[in-house]
Length: 314
Image (cartoon, rainbow, N blue to C red; front, side, top):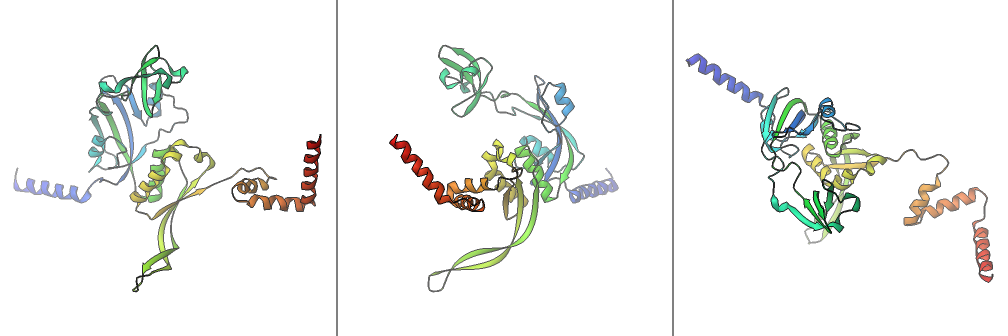
């Protein structure tokens, strides 16, 4: 290689360094297909047509590219390593060896058949036993042989991917990440606002003094619909995932706003009555309603007591 060639190569390397590429913590959008190497079984895909061809039920499933955060374990580590230094538009294939751990013979165990619901006591059934998921291999008398290995344990997986985008807007990052974690698209709003905080300090004489000061906080507001309240993944993992959001987006806090809508007209007292069961506020609402209807609550009580007494005499 001549001097000019070496100079050009050095310039190319410097240019590549300047351009950089993806790093850990970056949010990227991936389109991908993943198959087992030996059996060619579809593991996962963002291609709806491919999923249909492979016999996957595509109803109510989202096959848009996935937003992942490099370095957070959202995909196989080998794929994450491949993405570092790449850019939007790059494609690649990674073979992940024993993607779901090696097959462990000791994870095939015999348990009491009573631990399995009757309608799931057959070979091939997927069952949960003492908090572990497995599939039934055989039922013999009152015993069941259950394989607690992952169904694809020991299999290598070929992962074909394309980087279709990078997400840099923090609201979009939050939406994409939460969609990946909970399979639902949420409404979010990122605000910088002034809030008052109590600060406790120790004085010179050793006592504590509490003062209030105004500070700026970056807050991500998330609308929690009634439907989301019954989302099992949301209910189980909300706290942990939202703490991840705070760290990844480098914000101060998350506020989840409960959205209640669709209450039938003409039933304003229902909320108060439900609240009254916990703290007595609903009783005032009922009394106000009786007063508006020109009904004497004391008279109603007296009549009810008279009826109870009369019933007792009979």
